[in-house]
Length: 322
Image (cartoon, rainbow, N blue to C red; front, side, top):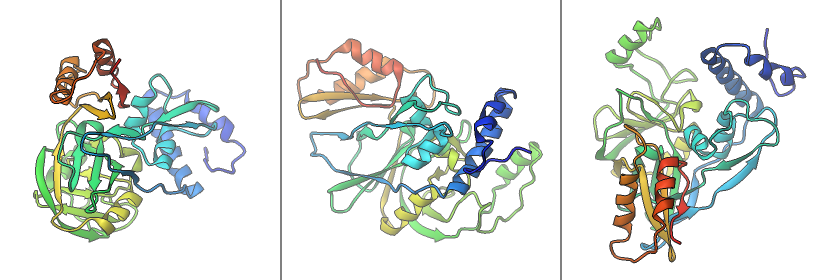
């Protein structure tokens, strides 16, 4: 029987064996390895990235970091360890196998971003980039979290709402639509799922004024940074635990969809592009974002680079001034 643990001398043989299976089955096996390794290693928890809030004329946060991998690393492990999303890590590192990247490979971490074009207050969730921004009451900091959102056909809606409650150790009552969908796949869900490791809401759920929608933890951390939920917002458990401590009730929550963000850092203009939730990458939308950012400030824009950034969709901010 295959067994994965950090002290297993057969580890170096197990991962190559996965390649013998079909692509779909390889994904299942690798995901199981990831979950068992996370539990076995007591992986350190990285709390939300906290950034000093730039002045109103600037939008750039942080800097891209690099990490060098060991043989056992996968994108799922690195994402959770670094506190970033799975899809964001993929976008920032195209062409690298997310399950067998290899020892010595250097990955770019998506730890730099432009603030969305939205009021800098409360909670702002940008679906296209799979990130949540929480602006502190002091106006000095912004906390950035990777999130999982609704899957195709069960999308997280655009909305302006607010926090109305916080629930510790929530009980999950699967909606009938969810139970029916699982039953069609041969998975019979109970009517009530009590708190614990099998509860998909994790240790905390933040209730929104929009009925039926929560920001919550998860029993499947690999889904953070992906479109996998039934419409709610998923977070790493340690992230949601830290958020509930600082997020007041009645905090405003704004859910937006901005795949293209343009913003300034000093005299330089940057563009950040993410694949849209629907349709293909579209450089015309990127051009519109750049024009909006230059309405009140002149810039010598390299339009060829704008098109390149838009078509690449790496999710990383790129300077587009000459």
